[in-house]
Length: 479
Image 1 (spheres, rainbow, N blue to C red):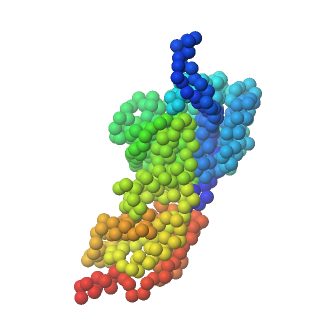
Image 2 (image 1 turned 30 degrees about the horizontal axis):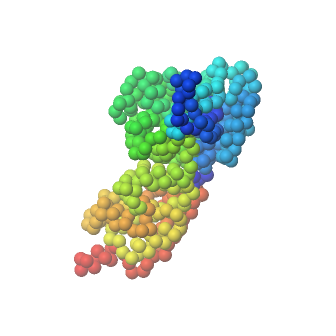
């Protein structure tokens, strides 16, 4: 992802697995027993569990350090071969234990229908020397990471000792820790930044319902008291609810999409959340980003990896009013859409203004701004902001009308409003790659320019069209 700077390395720690799919067709019942006869068609192996989180994060552009436990068996080699498709994953931190098998889930499929699942695993705790190697590996990986993900599938890797070591090492370096939990309650994750239970895990941990948004917020608050951090509840068709320790609550509705398979959708959302945070985006923006990623994942068969291009398309589609270019969106949605564009490699250009009566000078600047990158976002001062800047007789057109006109221009991809006198706060939130202003400013005078350049972006100054101004048009109309 661009815009907020390069994605810092992400440490994914947890239960790695092999997901094997045996696919064929069924047309008859066995004469030996009342079971279907599958005619073998194909077989594929994909990363599962924490390895799927790592694959999704790498597919979204992150560098990943994967810490987990494998056997010394052919399945471990198969897992490494599957992960080799994602060159951003460092496999040197995988710990091998010859006394345990690599966890493998084999799903037998007839078309899209799963017939049976066969699990190969040992659920007894690893030996003390293996735990010691895991702890040492975790501490080394934490020294190279900007975000830590604990992907707990209750298969033995994330013991109390390993969890404690990971959180302690992260706290020592002020690195955020995201936990996908599998414990009955969440006390073991004390010190984590964010825990991401699904609705069943939340209900089990708190004994509280989450049928409504209000109930979900109350249950999330109760869960937070168990470990002390923020809580993001994934609620299937109800979307996501983020409860923060500062009392703020964000409800993000699920995106309408045909559901084929929920396998691994939580892993995809977790990875997208981590990648967005590692890129410097806010937690609220990252939740929108993760929600869009989950929507793509459930539309796929089996354990799925979502690519940057797929997520970019999904975020485009999440813009209201039919996803037309130039739509007016709120600040949080704009940040999530921009994050998706940047994840797909697009350079996002930002400019701002009142744009009260749009004239050729405005159009010329916006067209030139669009040529500075791949996507153009225009931030409009709200009506109250314009009045403070221009006086009580302005704006001539209200903010809805101005947004509609600006959004109708072919070069504009997104419109957002800001209430403040300067665009500094919204520039900081959105994290564009290019900041455009008229050439009547010097570069060091452009508000937000230092913020954009500090993240690897640049400021572009566009020549003005002489003799064109809204104030002149208003004066002429009055005359």
